[in-house]
Length: 157
Image (tube, rainbow, N blue to C red; front, side, top):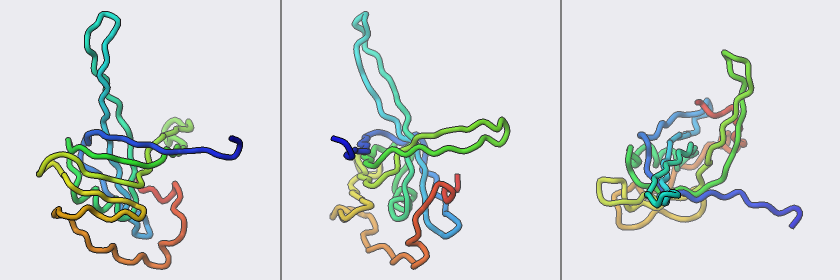
């Protein structure tokens, strides 16, 4: 299987806080959110235990705008994407720091009305789900300058 690999993440969880949306110097929207996933298991004594795992998620372009408009703290969401690790030098200690985050390519809002439900959004070719109150207009065309690749230096946080 030399040469083949797969970097894919699928998560269903609840938002720990409202998404934080910012813009790169070139005007590209980027959103950051934290997603909690829960696991329930029995320990050696037969008692049920709950474990929460927190995931850092980054959404770009139209997905970032949608997240900022429709996602709220506590809302349930399906995220699909890939893992990416970035590094930087800590300004106070000078040590190299690392963060692994999920770069989202798909987003589906789950839950009941008022919980951000019913939307299916994708950075790829899937369209928004019909029959909801979400803005389903086609996104504005990107300016020619936006076709340049996005790098870690473009992330505003």
